[in-house]
Image (cartoon, rainbow over all chains, first blue to last red; front, side):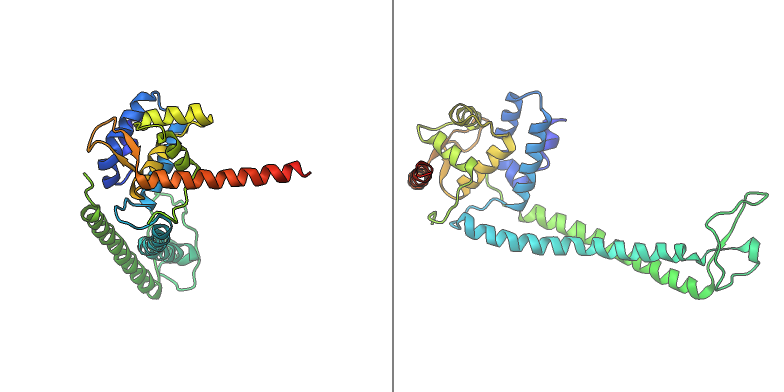
Length: 171
Length: 101
């Protein structure tokens, strides 16, 4: 694995401050063994969890602040993921609960008809329908999924931008 | 404001390594290996260096560079003395208790 890829795991401010030294150290320790790679990954995680601070706060007090920040960040970061996951499950349930019917089998969608996902026909073609009331559910759930996905993407873009702008320059 | 800093083993080893003079990262790593038999990984080493520097216990002697030497600050020296005295007390207590068995 390339050194610079491993260094990219670290926050930008951390790389600006220690990246050159760490890279030189890795150069001296070639080849990169799995133990060193694991150590670097763990170090990068630690660097993200404990951002560089150049104030008079002690390690103890900064750790308390870090724990709160980590909890807040984790909640904020996982909320859109949870929204996408929940709505995706709802859409999948729409399918898996048996609302799919084969037009050629029944001729017209029946609300209570339960069929299989797949069935072979002589010409190999098939059509899938949802009964109208289930179709509304599906449309609603798909719309929720789209909104959740859009929200997650917007959140990710905003957070990445905020992180880039907020990382202190320590050069 | 460094009175309540609690050092990890790695951070203590780095302070001990710097006690006899400034060293850069690789030299610190080698010195710790000689003194304690432990070989700190580069991620662990620089994580501890970053914390010590942020806590004001060590500082870099150069603004930039691939081999930037670090040295103990006055606060770092005081802190190391305190930690070593504490470890000495702990060792003596343990030795006394073992002797009493």
